[in-house]
Image (cartoon, rainbow, N blue to C red; front, side):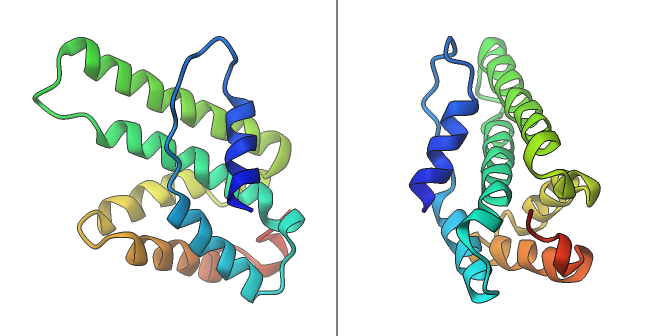
Length: 142
């Protein structure tokens, strides 16, 4: 199913922009396992995975910034990250508004900062914890 999610993310990127993207497939697979364990169908949770994929691209771009990069490289990572962030909001406004309503973007940034040294299992568990504690079950998927 990750292939369908990644394919949809690629269709959202403007065709005149030449990008090679690297979506966090392990994160998507772990979240998919969570949705399946909660008896959700792919159609029900696909939009959530696409949105999280876009947010992970945003965060990944901004995490690439460091003091060894040139001004041009730093600007590119900032603008590229912001582009993915805007795609997230555009996509959610059409397909997954519940994620905007519960401020997933801000929460994911906080989770990413807290779990940066703890790795993927912690990141996944924190996202699932957010879903379980802050998003009403009937609004978890759309």
